[in-house]
Image 1 (cartoon, rainbow, N blue to C red):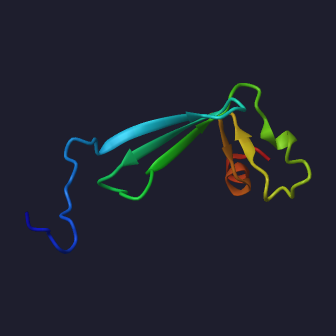
Image 2 (image 1 turned 60 degrees about the vertical axis):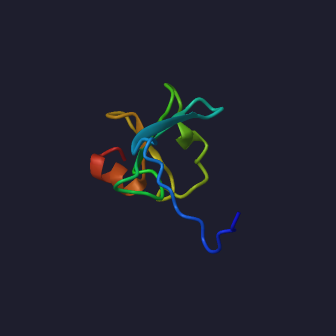
Amino acid sequence: MALKAGRPSETKAEDQPRQFTQTYTDHEGYSQTWHYDLDKSPNGPMMVEIFYPDGYFPEEQEENLPKTKRKYFNPANGKMVAYTRAKELGLL
């Protein structure tokens, strides 16, 4: 039997899905949904959605931060937004 020299041939896994989602739940109660589309972004997720439980307000933990570094809760969609977006939405 002869040994092959050089780089092994690359095989594509045609049976793996090209679009899928993964959901992670943290010990604090919030969950993250990672959306992948390997045709558009082969190296990582296209979009990450974070869902906070009812009554979860992390701004209480951020009292010592300057207001430009804090995250603000957007009640319209239940997500946290940065200072500039919160100012645009009129949350401040």
